[in-house]
Amino acid sequence: MAWTTPKTDFAPGNVLTAAQMNAIGNNLVEFSPLFAAFTSWTPRIDQGANTNIAKSATDAKYVKVGRLVIANCAITMSGAGVAGSAVLLKGVSLPAAAASNVFGNGLLFDASTTTYYNVTAQMNGSDLQFVSDIATNQAWGANPNVAIASGDTFRLNFIYEASA
Image (cartoon, rainbow, N blue to C red):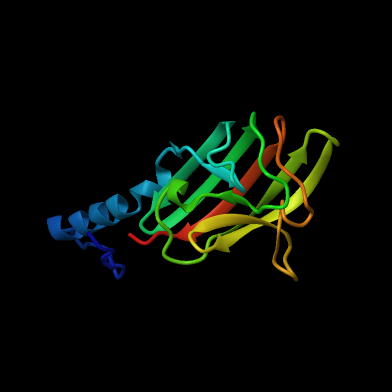
């Protein structure tokens, strides 16, 4: 069902018709996903040869309204990646297939140094890549040359247009 422009030029004494009330009701149904609860999803993190690295994903949730997807996640690693390789949130694990670029931001907590890093997330092919330097498009993990490790935590928020 698509949005229908409702009658807006009411005057004293006008009586609403069933068709006008149904148009208002249909419009409410069209926007009801805005009020839906977020749905859980399972992200997949890869770094180098280590794929689907062991992790605990808390608050990995999204809501999809039409083709708009809003997602967030907190992912604590219990496995490790391979230094010198980009850390990727695999596109196959996005809540919905992306029609366009996905952009987001977040934090990475490095448990070994108790340091927080700001990261930006952007598409790299069909995967979401964590970028450490927007100006040079440097992937986190490749630059700086580090491996994600047990105890490291990603907190990420992103929004994008789904393909359907």
